[in-house]
Length: 223
Image (tube, rainbow, N blue to C red; front, side, top):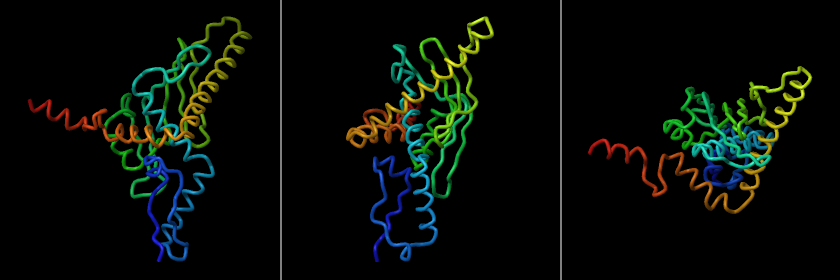
């Protein structure tokens, strides 16, 4: 009998893989496994899976507080704030929410994600030059919710309308630019060779030398 390798789309992402091989026929597999596989396929076709990859990668990239790219000759920085929802397609725990200004970067959240959960929804702050935007971004079609634009500077109502439209387009362009950078990286061989291993280590709370930050902190405390 052919063996079915159990691997959710999320754990494949953390290994840098893009598909499920070694599948058995539906007659040979447990009904629950068949249903789980159908759920994964639907998510992949709908783009939700790629959106989760993107948000997880963006969380990792944003922790340094450095600009991720330039847009209109100004640096664009991203910070995850307030709340974060992580989700898996299958498993005993399929969804966890964390709240608090520093919650998205908490080591406990990272350890949970290391078990195979990816970011489904997050509250972000985007800073482009001196302009500050806030929004909630969902992996499902990268829908924007609760967007907050920078303070308007125009005084005339007609000018304020134009400024609001411009800022809305600028926010859309910023999101598009971030997605394009991720997709460009995701399609290269460097994704599996360097990016995924580094992301895995980050989720495990390890420094560049591969040492657990929890163990390092414990040793320092014991001195």
